[in-house]
Length: 110
Image 1 (tube, rainbow, N blue to C red):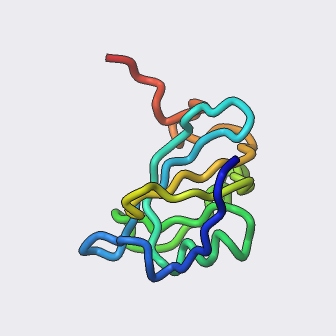
Image 2 (image 1 turned 180 degrees about the horizontal axis):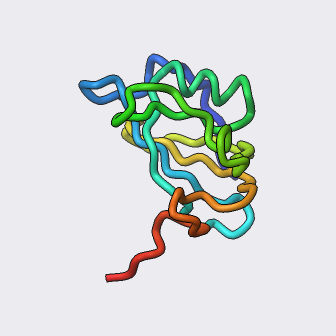
Image 3 (image 1 turned 60 degrees about the horizontal axis):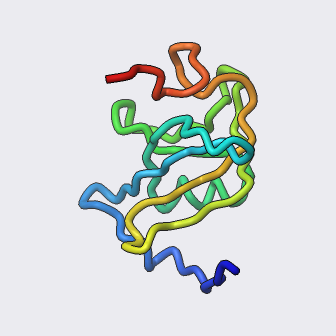
């Protein structure tokens, strides 16, 4: 049985830029779809909207996944790791997750 712990946003360990990595995973298949970054505001927006919202490091702006493409991510659950410095967000993905048109951003193999 998974233990639920009271969550306080202030307990998350954001990096020096105020960001925390967010791993996005399909809630049914557990396929890793993408990695993006959140700050406190984008995490709060995600919780409020029920859709993923991120901070774009390159554009320096917030973005809701799917706002322009229609490929939304509906949040099913959010967990944080033992160090409290990373998020795992399970979603129902509509369409593809990657801007290249691939289902996952992790389509290249080594």
